[in-house]
Image (cartoon, protein in one colour):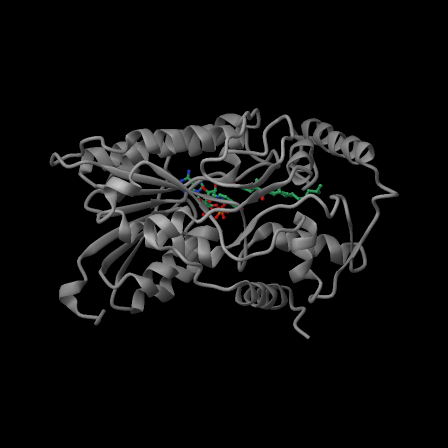
Length: 369
Ligand SMILES: NC(=O)C1=CN([C@@H]2O[C@H](COP(=O)(O)OP(=O)(O)OC[C@H]3O[C@@H](n4cnc5c(N)ncnc54)[C@H](O)[C@@H]3O)[C@@H](O)[C@H]2O)C=CC1
Ligand SMILES: CC(C)CCC[C@@H](C)[C@H]1CC[C@H]2[C@@H]3[C@H](O)CC4=CC(=O)CC[C@]4(C)[C@H]3CC[C@]12C
């Protein structure tokens, strides 16, 4: 569509717009939404990179705010046509308290919904998570499942519990009357493990490998497969849903969609090695040396240490009972619901996603050959 002033009339708000996914959503909107007049980026922590975005035809408004504060959310939402709500505490490492996780992920989402209703914003896209489904506390595998696959979604950990509650609130809000008398149209997207430029856990793995002399020690059997999805494709799905939600409200309203692309099914560690291998790391297979019971013992000791040290410092290693359980339970998605409902196709191929991620690891860690 030609870039002309009369086509630019929409106001978008992205909460969590300075996060790993949020930044990619912001940049994707600027590249792929020709109707954009104003892009509001709402985050607790604003990134300096936002300044470079203010030189284009779209008005980029940086809003430092807290989704737990209803009045701040209402002020940011007022006048927006679409809200893409990605803000959240993504914590399975014990960094934040369960109360804080609930406050941000559930109460924060309630505040966004109520702000849409009070100010008349009609379209809300929520970033949910695969964790709303599983893996469950019984360790049941979810093998090539889709949005309709029966699965006993039982959670105890604060993070998946909070995401499940928030998703339910968003879906239940679909159809509510907003200020002005029209209906709210909501939709929730469920990414699996997101990877790509800006993925902090990938960076943590790389640093761990450097500390261990260029080696990482396998803790997860190669047979345990996880679905992963490239951040650029997750961002693209968010933008496409936002663009299609008005025209396809009857079909898409109140629906959930897994985020997927052509990334291969692999164990979490083997998948990471697709990027860390070309950066010089090697995965040492230690399944004979480090049996599961020993890993469970180490994970439990980490949790105990975290609890003991909490008054003094934050000790939050990757390995804890929850991450070990999730990593050791197959969770793979096979679906085309997003394509059937709103024509989604991945924007980035697996080869492109892999190359971009490798280049990012090499660039940020100075390991380029
Ligand atoms: N990283 C992953 O593998 C997956 C992430 N998700 C979901 O995607 C969303 C984004 O996750 P990531 O980008 O990975 O996390 P992130 O931590 O990089 O980004 C979250 C953003 O939300 C902001 N935020 C946190 N608390 C806030 C508050 N009280 N008020 C305003 N902003 C606040 C943070 O400052 C951050 O910029 C989250 O909702 C998460 O649950 C879903 C599936 C997988
Ligand atoms: C035994 C090892 C030390 C474990 C290392 C891998 C773990 C840190 C990660 C294995 C699976 C990851 C989670 C999964 O991708 C699903 C997720 C969805 C989200 O919404 C947020 C992130 C996460 C919980 C993700 C976190 C890291 C793992 C537990």
